[in-house]
Length: 139
Image 1 (cartoon, rainbow, N blue to C red):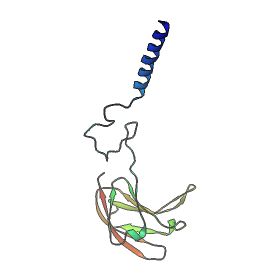
Image 2 (cartoon, rainbow, N blue to C red; image 1 turned 90 degrees about the horizontal axis):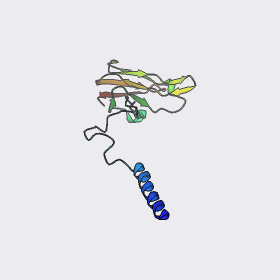
Image 3 (cartoon, rainbow, N blue to C red; image 1 turned 60 degrees about the vertical axis):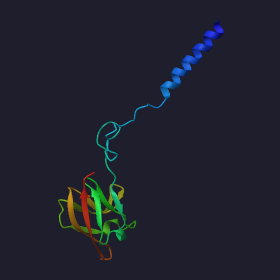
């Protein structure tokens, strides 16, 4: 009888432990949640990644950048501080120079400040100008 009682206890305990490790049957996020919503595990806002392009991909194009993020220009190592840029409306997007600071090296780019469209120019170290459009869009 003791052996049967012990076996039954082990089976019930095992079932309880295994069920505690099972995946929830309901989805982790509400059905109406947008996949583009950016909320961190603690419920606070989460930073969105920048848009990264090489200078050769920009000439004559319209680049969409999410407001509050940046358009980062993937330039050759060692030339980060030699690039210059301008926009016709710095309230929409503003150039941010690259270079070394505090032991880190930053690439040049444009900060997307508010929704809208602006013309932009990027000047390479050799003086070549690259003209393109930046469209700052909602997330």
